[in-house]
Image 1 (cartoon, rainbow, N blue to C red):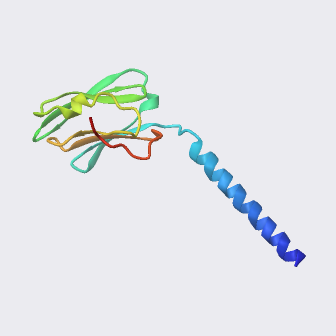
Image 2 (cartoon, rainbow, N blue to C red):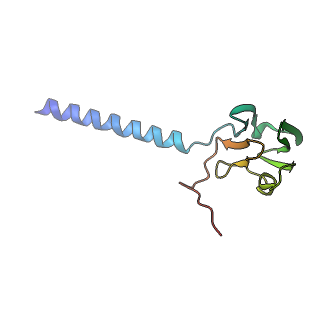
Length: 126
C-alpha cells in the first residue's frame, strides 16, 4: 500500500510540474512578431515587425489592382489601395493578432502572429 502511495505522489508531482511548464511557456512573450502577407492563398512575404529599424513601403500588385503597404517597428498597415471600398486602408495599423487587414477585391490579407491580444474572440459591431 505504501508503494502505491509513493507512485501516486510521484505521478502527481510530475503532472503539476508539466502543468507549470505549460503555463510559463504560454505566458512567455515571443521573440518575434511576424506579419504574414498573403495574396490569393500564397504567402508573399513574412516580416518580423520587431526587427524593423527604418520604416519602409512596398507595393503588392495583382490583376485587380495594387496595395501599398507600410511597415514600421512593431506595426504594419495598408496606406493606399485602388480598390473601391478601401476597407484595407481604413483598418489602419495593426500590431497584434486581434484583427487582420483584408482587401477582398485584391485577395490580400495581412495577419500578425506571435502576439496575444488577450481576447478569446472579437465580434464587430457599432
